[in-house]
Image (cartoon, rainbow, N blue to C red; front, side, top):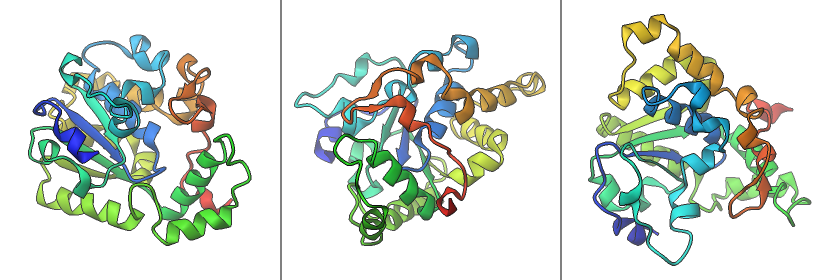
Length: 248
């Protein structure tokens, strides 16, 4: 996969790679990043998030763009391109590591990740009877599609310390506790800070409210259709999204 990604055109300063280590609140990050990057282009009432699922708007490199045999022409995508991936840092192509794009990474309490991952998988046809205990043991052994959870998070954490201008490391719990602060962090990291006028007008609060899980799940684009490649209805991608959900 990294070889294929390496054949993409040189990354642009405007590229943003949103990266996840498993079920860590993917939609909760894709939606606000998309809204932040495009907040000067269209209002929230005209946002494509109203009629399209975030996974379609911020496609996964390995699950969508490079899932087939061909090499997609990424140059046809307008500037300020947004891509997502589950790949660990070590597996990223040099064109991403050494390029000018920015990386936004998010992680989450591993216990919540396990429960979320299990719920996601039992929504897949044929896996409805998968025992939670088996999922837990597999996770603890590090038998995950994109590598052990701990190694995945530590890889990006290290890079965020050494290259803070290129890698932003976020925690799902912080996004839930203070979404306004985290939205400001993402915007400033992306060199698209909100103006004083926008802050006074409540633009950040509006984005936080619009991109909340409770609002997103009621939008038209998330009520119909299925997640490409998994045949999972979009509605199953919007569960609780609560911090500490593993105790329930």
